[in-house]
Length: 180
Image (cartoon, rainbow, N blue to C red):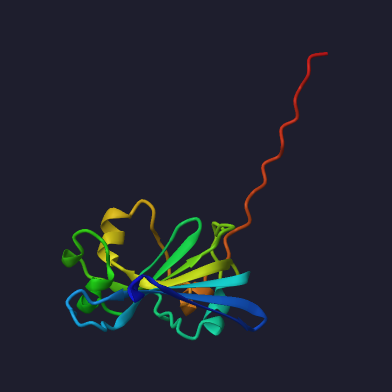
């Protein structure tokens, strides 16, 4: 098996949390040498037990989310997708998407919660897993707009300063009226 089809896995304990790093690789297709260098295509990081979103930067030193409130961020019911930095044309060889040459690719962090994220997202919501990879903001905005809801960056001061929503009004349970 060629090395580019392999995967490296490392496990350790940090802040009493079991952390598992898994690295997937890609080679530059333009490099035809016998010993082609490997580039990290995807880093998959798992946490056991799940951790609050606010704790992820202390567990993953490579995770440096933007503090800007308008940094592109999206969510679904089970994940948060954060775009980081400017697009990089050099990253195209990491992508296996058809038509990748027409799109710009950017470093992304995707946080997953297998138990689901609450409707009102806070930094105390827990995540089980994180991926560091590359995605296209254009692709998300155009083709995935129905599944990727734009949100305020959860690592910004503005996100933390959001007012709590008013408590939901409880509807009384109707009591049946029986004929006598």
